[in-house]
Image (cartoon, rainbow, N blue to C red; front, side, top):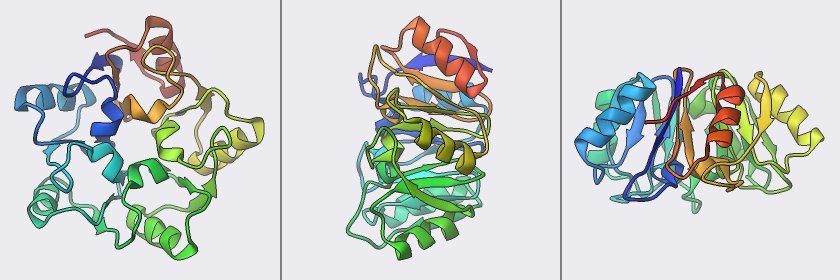
Length: 226
């Protein structure tokens, strides 16, 4: 189960543009079909080739696990229909002034950590949509937890300034080992440059060999450069 390197629209910030679960990988329509299909092949899941709100920023405007996907209120009906065609889980369009749920939520199939400032009724909607317990929290003292880590059913990789207390919360929420690291040659916002599931990890093209080694250890995958 390897770690691959890639870019999307010539950017190494692939987590901003895409997201992966054990059921699917979501990649915007603007990404060429062959490149999107190759990423799905690496992750060993079906491809959902859809944008969110007509935007490239699918990884920012959506969050998901194997049970469900939460979409920004910007999501268009044709995009929702495309997602429905490729995923039989919960599809929930959030009615909220918040739009960047990919930055606000970090989830696997066992739990979810959300922005510590999230209102209780929004947390309940996240819990219902993803089918897991939701806990408010921070990573490295920061609230945009979705951009600060990557979580799979095998492990979590988080911002290198994760505190010991925060680590214990993550271990309790996700029920997997937690480690720290960076992507794209020292970027601590792990979620912006890494997508992963139980099969493989795909990191931004600027990610170094030592960073790939840490990613592989943290998420229980094996390093491989594409």
